[in-house]
Image (cartoon, rainbow, N blue to C red; front, side, top):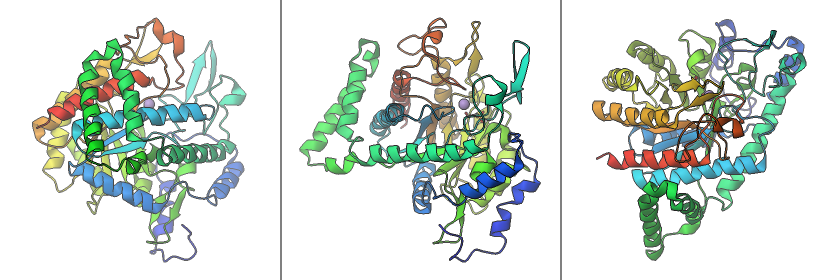
Length: 454
Ligand code: PEP
Ligand code: MN
């Protein structure tokens, strides 16, 4: 990954900075331009967090998803925090995703591509540049890589040195993820035994049958001489919203094998609903990197926009390159998604379609909590499957905000978290996440949908 000993096609390096002349949204006002230059120069010399070969492997895996032969599970915090990057919390999140993946693998009878919203999910788009509390107005919190959450002028001032702290926190998070997923923690039998614990709880009786079936399948595999050692390791990919250009650009390097630019901050990066303007900076920059990329699509998306996005971001129609992450809202998904699926189906493009059942279903409770109803989340996933059934396209995966901890941020689920309970353990600095049990419950429910596909 050096830029010195490779042939780089003319214009590639300049092109990576073309976004600087385009309209851009959701970037902080750093104040100190010199400090930003110093930090980005330093960041551009630090080692990549992922290697281009791994990124290509993910692209191959996603090509399998697009073709209907695999399913994507993407999950993690809305906003990771520097303080939250502890061994316990990282382990709990990885564990939750692995547990969900086992259930989905069995139900789908296909490989599950596992991806964390982890190791770089530090920058947040905000609906307002400012926040006012008790008559005091300060810059909005934009994620730990930009400023602090604490509501003081000092903490809310954007601080460029946080970019480097973001890099180092991502590096140590990814290091631990690699250890967990390669070092034996991901042993299929172990992961299943955790799921058994979940399904044995009387509140989750409904899921016991599937858990028992998986039990039998594992016993069958053992009897048939399956190589369980190879099932102790899993591929696990990192992803985040590629929002903060002063992080994404310096992390983008030329691959010494091919001369192509790769964003080495994560295997997969996506553009959020608020920064995907067709003629904006983010779309231009993403069009030039070789990673598989995602685009969030909200309910106002038109078929014409989708066609334009495909032409700009995937002109070669590379399998696995483009993932559309739909976040429509449970009330409208059955109306707005089918026309988009149909328009793409008629074209020569084959993107991955993934459901984000979280971001279209936000509500605020009378006692002031930003939350989501578990039932709405489940209903959006069901609507997603229905839309794909209707158009005969492949529902390729789910993208969820979750944590492995026992928080109380989303309403409902088998623990029946109610509005009063939200206060007891609400920890998210941004959007509400499914807790460990709600995440597993969602996996079992999605498993029912997958198994019901003919
Ligand atoms: C997010 O994924 O946290 C987010 C801000 O989503 P969206 O861009 O879909 O609003
Ligand atoms: Mn969010």
